[in-house]
Image 1 (cartoon, one colour):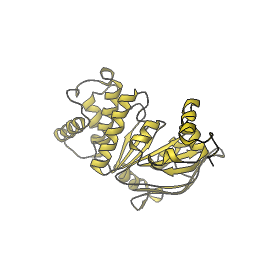
Image 2 (tube, rainbow, N blue to C red; image 1 turned 30 degrees about the vertical axis):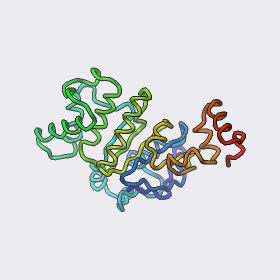
Image 3 (cartoon, rainbow, N blue to C red; image 1 turned 180 degrees about the horizontal axis):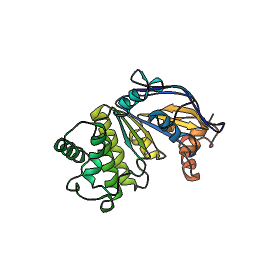
Image 4 (cartoon, helix red, strand yellow; image 1 turned 180 degrees about the vertical axis):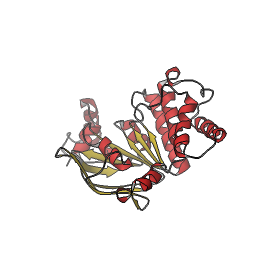
Length: 260
């Protein structure tokens, strides 16, 4: 579990994250949603230590990350897996070399053991016979699966995903969502996903946090997100006039009349 307590972050006197507190639960997919500029990416960077918070606590299973020295933070980082937007694979490395990379960085495995682990992780994301291909030789969906294999290779306790469905068609995006969810359950990881994709929210949003103007504005699950009466969240979800009209028909209420 990861817990944030009263986290604040500003840049040039502009508040990006304001008094943010929450718990990201182990064994669940925890989703952070919100408009562009709401602070999602900065929040993720604060959680993983790429950006220092101005105040507050970031606690990994009872360990206060903010108060740790460099060596202690490095130990926590070895427990993290990262799935970057776009995959962020090394173009000059093969698929196998990409997956082996974090094992060379963060473990003492021998070469044979690293290749064996890479093969296992590639098999887990349903990729075979691609080890010696380069990223330019595989599809966008395959790149995301390679990136997931790389993220889970060191067997992390915490998995962070930044817009994992960016640039993917809906069918492939659904495959990636289900894969992230399956791996989270299988390895009992604490998974945090930043996304704009409402399909992801409805498919795997076991816990959903909505950021609005630097604050945690709403918290719930995929089962409660559509029944909310939070106006700002509704505006985010039902972005088109067509969807708003559908909701009005279903609820029998004029748009915004029930929102608070």
